[in-house]
Length: 171
Image 1 (cartoon, rainbow, N blue to C red):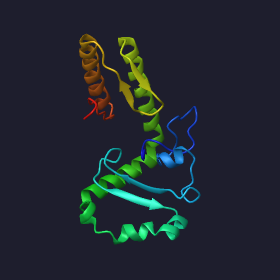
Image 2: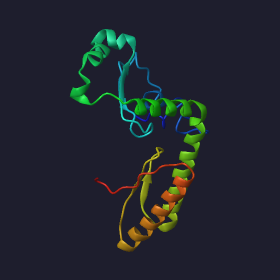
Image 3: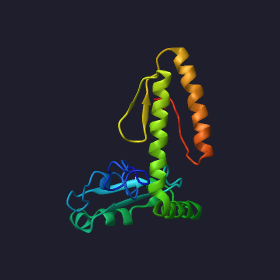
Image 4: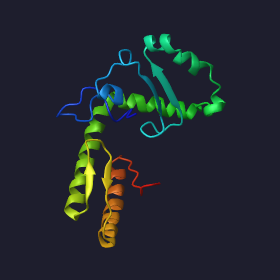
């Protein structure tokens, strides 16, 4: 989880971490030491259909994870990734390597600015250090105003290259 957004060694300069390697490195875990089987998908941060399964060689030797993954019929779980999707994922990995840390800073700044805007509107919300903000809707008037501001912020973010997905919970 968190590939492209969360990374290793978070600090005060880069609270989301460096490198975008995901939640395992963000929390300083070791795949071999903790027998972690890392499975994920490329849909959100990588804008590509596809997924991956990975683990340390030692974990694979104990549990045969990669052998299972290699011998699984992809049609049982999904279709094979198309060339365009693979190209999109590769391009995103290249972009992450080149400018991912800068983009993570921009994402954090946008999230914190959004939280300040919610606070100014008097809209109750929670923020726990990740780029996910929970908004608690109360009076209809506040909801309508926050919704207008949210759509305006979404458009402004899009013009600066940040894609957001405001949605009601549960979906």
